[in-house]
Amino acid sequence: MENPHIDIERMIMQSQYKQTLNSVSANTASNMSDMERKDYEDKISELFKAVKTLLDHNNSMGRQLEEAKTSLQEANVTISKANDEIEALKAKISKLEGENAMRRRKTYGKSAESSSSGNTDKGKTKDERESDFIENGCKASPDDEEDDEEDDETGESPAQSINTKRDTSNRPDHYKKMHADVCIVHDCDKEKLKELGYEFIRYSRPVDQFDRISVIRQDRYLYAWVRDSEGNEFEYFAPKKDEERPCVFENESKKLLLTPGASIYCDETWVDTKVKDKNGKIHYQKRYMWVIVNMTTKVCYYMYGRRKRKVIEEFLKGFTGTLMTDAYAAYTYFCKLKGCVHVCCWAHVRRIFDSALRDYKDGRAKAFIDLISCLYKVEVENLVFGRTEKDIVKARKSIAIPVLNKLIQKANSMLERYDKKL
Image (cartoon, rainbow, N blue to C red; front, side, top):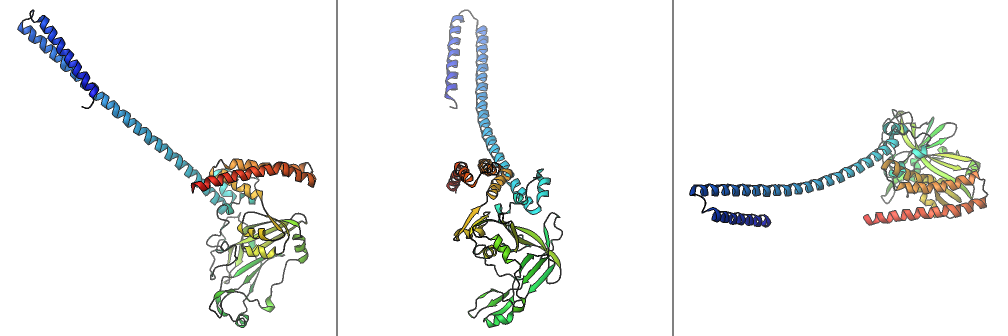
């Protein structure tokens, strides 16, 4: 039986029709002729067939209704899944758009952002617009210094030969360019290498150093690949006595900049530098610029070179005081120095959350931005109200420290949730 309930109803109706027919036949049999009785029975039979057809149609409609309900449920499930997929795709599109916007700002600067998103970001500084270290730490492009990001903690560079650089003089005008008016080439003293027991193999990739004096001077050091008596190969530069590079930084100025106990600020960025290669061809190369500022003594120094830890480590060697930087890994070295306090910049921290909210539409970043604004408010009030050093310490303890506690609690909570998903 397809449906026991319907079949039972049909049996009951059939029995009722038969009982009615028998009853009517018994009552009217004596009063009807044979022809009338036959005609009466035929009508009853047709009526029974009509009712049976009606029941069959009713059962068929019931089955169709059940099938329609099942199909509707399946359609609803399919629509729900499709909606979930659409939302997932929208989130993915939003993320990709954010990544694309970030890369466009990194590659083309402010003009690309205003043309693609309609946001001109007027009033923002270059530091606020930079987002290199958020993603990859300002990695150089293939045609730039490929080893600038490698081995930042050790300061070692891989073995590379001199490569012909691609001419990038057609880059946008808003790129900052620096022209080296004087290029001095320092050749490696091969005779001194022999005295040290090294065998000259070939020249390695040259090391460039830039100084802003009255003109931009470029010093190119021709490092040599050498092999010692044990068969080890490495880069080495032996300066010639008559070509030693004089120090162009005044000792008195350096003393003012690195005054013991002072608070100095340090950051690094990059510039496109116009240089000549060994064939005399002019082209642009990415070079890094370190900026060290002492607000108390009003001294600012620009140092050009590689983005290696050893560069800033050598310059600030022996400094005692407070050093404020961003989260670049090269600066972690100063956390280990005795007498040097390393602190991180809240503007750089806020920039990461601002990028997460603006580019990736992550609403969780808003709470962090608001808390950091509370820290800014304390410092603004210190300036506006002309607070003394004692009052500044009191305001920071009463207002800033509770804000810092909230920040670290929210950060730890988010990290715990992230670790559980891994």
